[in-house]
Length: 455
Image 1 (cartoon, rainbow, N blue to C red):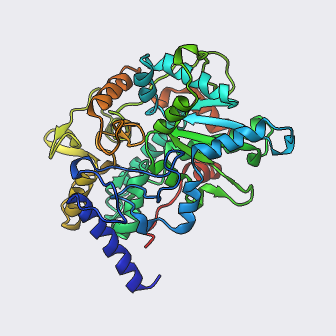
Image 2 (image 1 turned 180 degrees about the horizontal axis):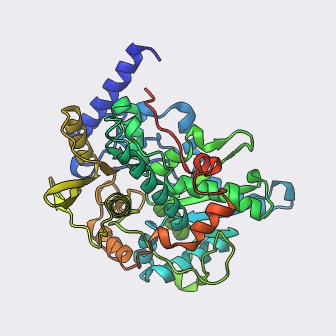
């Protein structure tokens, strides 16, 4: 792309975000949210199949979504899922696919609140509904998130140890939020992309786990398996269609379709199913164990808690300190927080959590002025974290955050027990049986990726 076009693209993106912050709409950027509630937004589902695709109104305007991406994203909707399930009910066995659904832990509180149940029972009811449609396997993505956390921990420690030889290695930015990644690649470019953690997001590691490990266990060709992810955020649709997550040799994507929690709930409403009448069915386990898996969450409020996990791991690994509790210092607001590790008056580690586009803009401004003291920044485009994703946190009339719903979801999410990925035996088994060891070429290929400027 020419320098002129790059300049125009960047100017368009930055102008779009400024307009969003001022709550100024135009024909091409419709329905933006108030600046203090900006967050990943939108696209077509069965309800809005004919709408123009606008992902992350302030983070990825229509000028940043190519026609090819638009086409791929438009195919991620309820109609496509119904089509695949319908083919399985017909006689032509050659077109049958094994349908697998992976549910994000941050989506489960939404169903718990909507069903009026605790998370474990709501999950069993959701599983019962999906299997009544013809889905063969339903997993949750906690295992994949564990991989992402462990790989992020190790990468941070490696970078921290190199900081005296490479003054550009820190800060490290987390990589689990596709809205943030899109903005970093399309607008911020080389100022940020070399600092982004290379560990794949939980969603994309789950894609590899299902399409690579699980298919081999089931003796299936990856193209014979259709993998759906249920997520709280529309931006996850955009992440799923990235070129690096398509295997050209197998002609298969790691994730075939992303549905938001709200889209799945809308499907339930369309079928007029009663939660009380649904069978209570336990989740399946990737490793094939029997029994009802005990649901758990990772550290952190409403997200996978990368900051807390990396902070505690780094404190122990780098300084031999066992941090039991983390104390957050509120800076601008509850979505711009700081955590410090000090010893004898010396700051050893300084991390920040930056959620929501308004705070991301503040972070970027400080970076441009050389005033970012942090070793690691956990960045999420949704204020409040992933539980507040627009795919499940909007009011029934749409367009605004349902604060009461979000509070209920946060309370439900926090009711789950915390399970540290370091203590999960399933991860250790998979590192050996699937990835041929933690530092193997196979592990690096399937658990990591690279982010670059893409003007």
